[in-house]
Length: 70
Image (cartoon, rainbow, N blue to C red; front, side, top):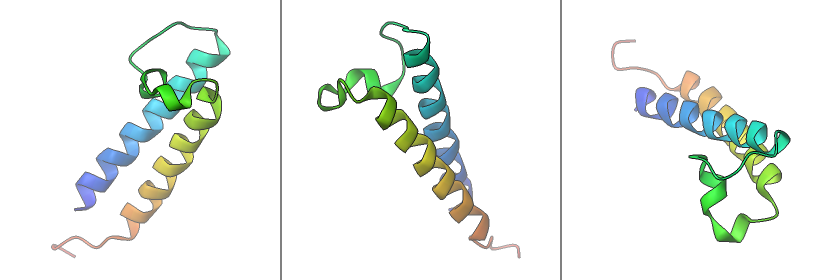
């Protein structure tokens, strides 16, 4: 479970940081998730920051999960 949470955390952080960079550089459509959700159009920067924060929270939470080996 810890590995899955860490992987999801990394994915969300990458999507968020990439989305922020894409917005700051006035980039066009890319592989970043926020660009393909119609409800988020106009709020791409906020949504990307939320993805970063959510990924960070999941990452911190995954550090507190104990492995079976511990």
